[in-house]
Amino acid sequence: MREMAIVVGDKAPDFELKDNHGRAVRLSDFRGEKAVVLLFYPFAFTGVCTGELCELRDQLPRFQNDDVQLLAVSNDSVPTLRVFGEQEGLEYPLLSDFWPHGETSRAYGVFDEAKGCAVRGTFIIDKDGIVRWTVVNGLPDARDLNEYIKALDSL
Picture (cartoon, rainbow, N blue to C red):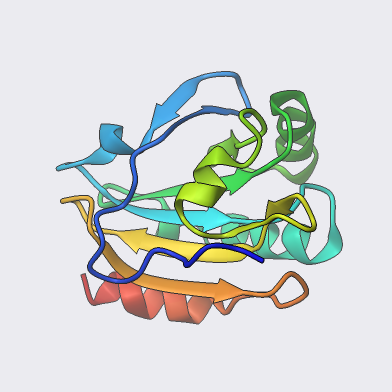
């Protein structure tokens, strides 16, 4: 069972998480500068997750540019994410919501207590820190990147 996910029109909860290189990344760092595609995924090295993250890698200019920042969050540890990012050639921040375990995933209502990981939740947050689009899928269901692109184009 998980709490209700954040909905369109909500102020996105701020967070500070370490990326795959151990650097602190705050959502508020992008306020006034860039929209953020905040993507939660269950675990590095799993089939559907790896496929989704590589699809984002292959279309990265759409999701990380002068106006948009992509942030991918899982409950993996920083060392795990470092190896995963290197292995898959991922050039965007992989954020560790490892400890306190799932705190940021819970704040967004996408943490599955029974499985101990985030479900596939995506939030597009505008430059003012307001959620403008969201989709939450179950663990086995990959997301449709074309939906993200449409949502970004409408900002």
